[in-house]
Structure formats: C-alpha cells, structure tokens
Amino acid sequence: MLTAVAAFAVLATCLGLLLGYAAIRFRVEGDPVADRIDAVLPQTQCGQCGYPGCRPYAEAVARDEAAINQCVPGGETVILTLADLLGKDPLPLEAGEEKPKALAVIDEQRCIGCTLCVQACPVDAILGAAKQMHTVIADECTGCELCVPPCPVDCIRMAPIAENRETWRWPYPAPTPTPAPRVQSV
Image 1 (tube, rainbow, N blue to C red):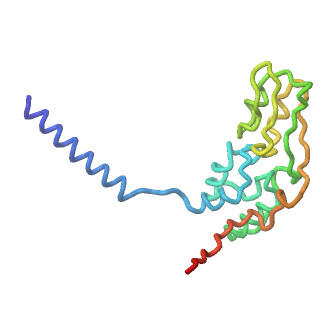
Image 2: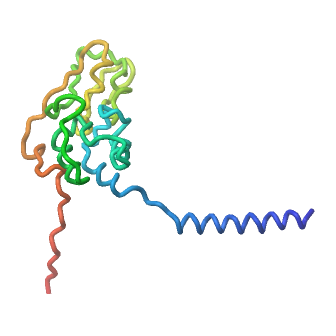
Image 3: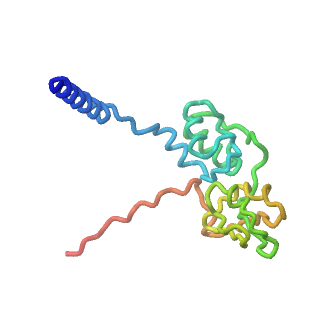
C-alpha cells in the first residue's frame, strides 16, 4: 500500500513539473493584431456591432470573421484606421449613419429610481440606488445610448458633446505622448 502511494506521489510530481514547464515554454500571450485593433476602437462596449463589447469585436476582425465597418460610435474614422492597419479597402458604415459624440443626461426631477438604466449601462457610468434619483458620471459615459430605451419615464436624453481642445483629437486615436528626454545637470 505504501509503495503505491509513493509511486502515485512521484508520478504526480513528475506530471506537475512537466505541465509547469509546458505552461512556461508554450505560453501564448494573445493576438497582437487583436490588441492593435482593440486600441483603435472607441471602447464604448455598446454592442451595436453585434458583439458584446469592443474586445470580442476586435478578435472577430482579427480572425477575419467580422467586417471592419460595424463600429457605429467609431464611424468613418475607425473604419479608415482599421483599413489602413489591416491593409483592406475602406467600406461604408454598415449599421447606419455616424452620430456625433454625445453624453447621457438624466432629468433628475423625473427619475423614479427604477435602476433599469443602471443595469443597461455597459460601463457603469450611471450612479443611483433603487427608488433613488440617478445621475450620470460624465467622465465614464461613452454615449452608447443603451440606457435610453429601458427608461420607463423617458427622463434620459443624449446631449451632444461640444468640441473643444480637450474633446477633439487628431489623428484618431490620440498618439501616446513620448516622454521628453531627461537633461541631467552637472
């Protein structure tokens, strides 16, 4: 009996070491093309492309299972960037027409606190509790409009975002700033 337990312990140790080595040696980081595509997308997580978020859509585009023209919030800018990135021809926007960037605004006097908008928001940009007034966290709202249809009292509207120095970016997406070289004093 003791010999059998020892044999199983040695076998389990050997297999564990083998699996550990294989996990390190054959590690797959992820699809770098999908990462680059995901970086171009607006990260609204709205589902208007037919996928549950920007990352699944990016992975489908990388596998060539989805067209590059399905991102409504990104519009023509994202389509052109993806076409350039993937070496494809740009296509017209598939799911409708491009809309200006907007922010959800809740009329707090009319809000009944049903929490349906909170449940619908894919990025948790709506703050509020049941039977309490709700409000939108402006810095978190992506303008996906998913909170508007479930509201039973129509107290949510989409307000266009005025373009100013902070909201307008060119080229899209904004380039990552490179740090200035450090000058050492002597």
